[in-house]
Length: 618
Image (cartoon, rainbow, N blue to C red; front, side):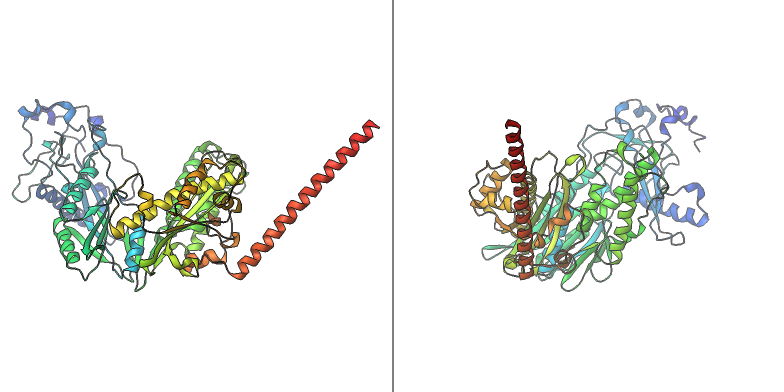
């Protein structure tokens, strides 16, 4: 394969390193194809694809197409030369072996860059929370969404700030558009950060940001890669367009009755060389591994295709559940768990606690019992998928009354090593939810172990409240920034929020500490919450346990009727029904009876002890 390599350096006068350093050891990758096994048709298709990829490099001025001469090579510092040559990565974008859509990409082995780590590589991308909030707002505004993919994104980034050289692929590069062919391993100067270089994502992000800001978009400081465009109507700023970007993919929503919408969409199409616009509708549209659909009054997102491909791992059923896993099985466990956790953490709140608990043990302490539990969770996810319960749905509501509702819960000392659990979810609804059933849209949920050791139920609930309030305020801030422009952040930004919010707990002791005079010292976690409540920045409410939504995030349980009504039908009310209140009263009486019996037993033990002492004295 490299037969001519040993003779080539001397002929060209190029300083080289031993051949072994150029043999890339690649991770197993089912998508990348091995050219040695191409048939004649595949060879022809990928030759065309290779040519088109090189043409993109030339058009976008990614590299200086005039190779460095042998004399100039001697003057190029070695630390500026990437030690491994460029290579082609070839994949089939078709749906099967017979459906061939050849795709080639020229990759630079950035891991052999001598300057690796010396330049910034961070590139913000939008979050799932921002995407879900934007989707909910779009449904309420009667906006139809579009998904797009940018052609040759990294090749379109800002010019590189450093001097960097790379060698041509082992087969060289063909002549195209009047540019002469490049000989194998010729030294080329990079002008832009192409695929594989450390700074490529950042230079592309800075480029897209520069272009969008010039189009009068504003990037949210509280959610990078979310770009909004507002227009002034009278004295009120009105949202016209919102764009969320994830590297070279994006979602675009806006008011199609506005001239600004059509102006910016046209500019985006021209300046970013959009491959294809896909309008959301009844047919599923793929975006970042999720499938999106949109109807008249709703938008829905699922990962059913991904969940269908999840497979349980074969485990010897004769193994004892307490037996520790061997290293290969540990690796299989971690891989299967990560695959399951991805869809669950985004779309399936009723399984968030179950899947979260499967990651609590350290790698060395995993047992076959844990593997059985993981396989059971994978099977459960498939059942949930078949029942249509592994998706989020966003429905229309009155956006003029938008409100953020945050139910929160905690469980005390019931986890591994007596750790405690907290959970919450953020829901977009309306302020009328306090009076009756209202449309609700889940945009975020979380189930996690409380990082520190807490010593009481109140301490666990307080820690959960602290975490939930932090996210609650952020969601309100983000919703406000999207709808009405971003705040000027000051030390008093919480008081400037105009999006109302309600936090809900079923812990009576926590509610009493926040609203009533407490005899015990208030926990530090509650001090901020009490200030926010007293300043009327947060409305804090109690609800019966039977009416709590976040219970399923802190314990294993079958979702209640109320929880299913929220998840499947997007409906909830803060006002408990008569049945809920009667059940809570019954639970209250049972708890009181338990306390009375405990007191009685304590008195009996004390009396018995006193009698015993008197007998000894007598």
